[in-house]
Image (tube, rainbow, N blue to C red):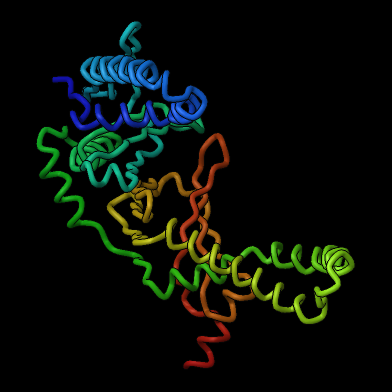
Length: 315
């Protein structure tokens, strides 16, 4: 029997659609004056009703179903579109949620197929539990296992059978921000300051070049470090990597949470890299290259076993 999108996806889709044109409302309000505010309010009300009606129709007419060999999706309001994706072509299934979606209990599920390099099917939006169960069911069907009639039972069994490989800690998040700092930015600042500061010093006699330049350089370096740490926290907060029977699964993200699976039979290479800072701190980055037509890569920061030299010192 075909399944539907989550009912709460309607108000969220309406809000997203209207937010794209919010700047028109702001410009119109500022430039129209008080006399035309009722007209603008009426136009906004019509746009809201039209968007609401369209999104309700879209969600009601969107259907997906798991058959014996394919996942079938039918969508469209004015014109219908049908897609059938064979299970053996499914490369990856990702589930993502931003802060608002987590508050509403909904999630976006994206199905990527082998050789395409792009997302084949996107379900916006499912209940968070339904999205997780559907991802597990698609993974099992891809492996040719039994049907997913009891998806909740399968999801719970799969979670219990997974082996935890790595979970990032707060200290490691901060270390990631330090070792992930783009040193090219600091070199650019170091080169640009001697060029810019003399002209500023000439235009402003009170500007003491020798006193301010080191402080300014240190301040810019501190800002760059803070930005790098912030990016690490937002991107890899709560990062967890686990292994199932024939796949790796991951979960990460603060503002927007991502989770997905990596089939072990698609892993082409695992590369361990260390820059100067990471090597001094005993950390490394693990890069997993997945075999596909487009050479996309999935990167996962992982606590490196301390380098050979450091291990030798500790032993």
